[in-house]
Length: 175
Image 1: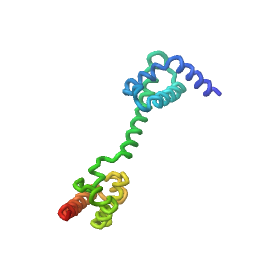
Image 2: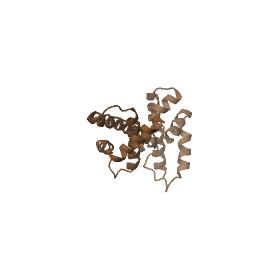
Image 3: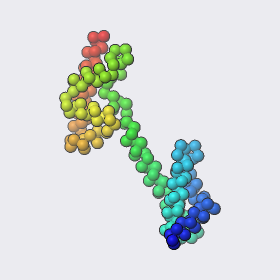
Image 4: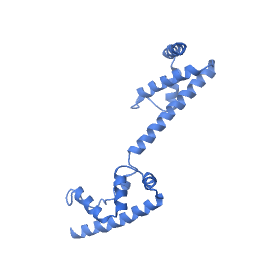
């Protein structure tokens, strides 16, 4: 019951003066134009209440304590979101697409036929690499998965690129 009373008091204080929350958001360059602005405000309010429950300070020290707790909490959240965004987004189009852009896929070959042709060029290890990269995995993740050094995968990638380049030149000459 005592804990609920502390949180209620913290919530009432937050409703009367939430300057520290907006100071933290400003420091982190999170403006109202940000897509998740309301989510960050709500998260900051929760962090405020959490800090209020453990706070024993007064005056400027109290403001600094709240500021620090909210700042680091939101910073951790932003870092987590950035890490998740990096995992979803491919490193670069060149990394994922081994297929050379010199071929107009719509006019000459369906993409499935091209992948089948490339598949026939690959060893099992090279094809496994292609499949994993198309699923969005990094070279480091693939290397850890199969227990090899990343440099081995970079070499594998270079061999595969040379094979695909030779194949595409041959297709260009035939057309």
